[in-house]
Amino acid sequence: MELVVEQLVIPEGANIILGQSHFIKTVEDLYEIMVGTVPGIKFGLAFSESSGECLIRVEGNDPELQAAASENARRMAAGHTFNILLRNAFPINILNAVKMCPEVCRIFCATANPVEVILAQTEQGRGILGVVDGFSPKGVEAEHGKAWRYDILRQFGYKK
Image 1: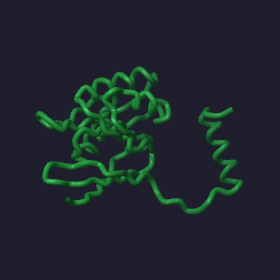
Image 2 (image 1 turned 90 degrees about the vertical axis):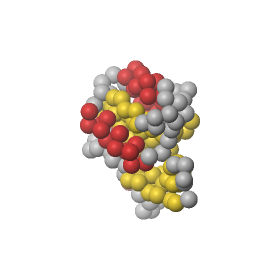
Image 3 (image 1 turned 180 degrees about the vertical axis):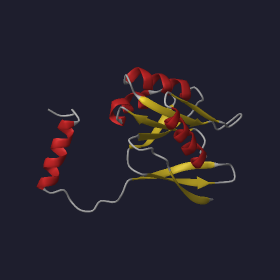
């Protein structure tokens, strides 16, 4: 077994949701979740089929995000994984609906941070072991950090 690290593509102003599922129906179901949950959302999603033709299946309503999701799937080359790139919404707006999709087994991350995927390469193929989401902490939050956090959550409309 070999360990491989792949940096994912996250276009400017986009967020990513990276997960694992178990069935080709994932592509259509995630598409319906995206368009049905947040009006005006822009997204691209790619699913790596792990049997049959083993193709990367791509859907979405934004060509740039579709191309980037396809590139991420190609870089990872891990079967039964999917990545969704989105704009005009945040992962928090759709994450529960994505997790409730019957084909979804797990979510590795949902972020706008740089993402590195740690993969195991075997003779059979690749699998995701984990992710590096963003950067390591630089200290402990002080009062001005708390004030900033409270303020930004209110600006986003998540708290009153």
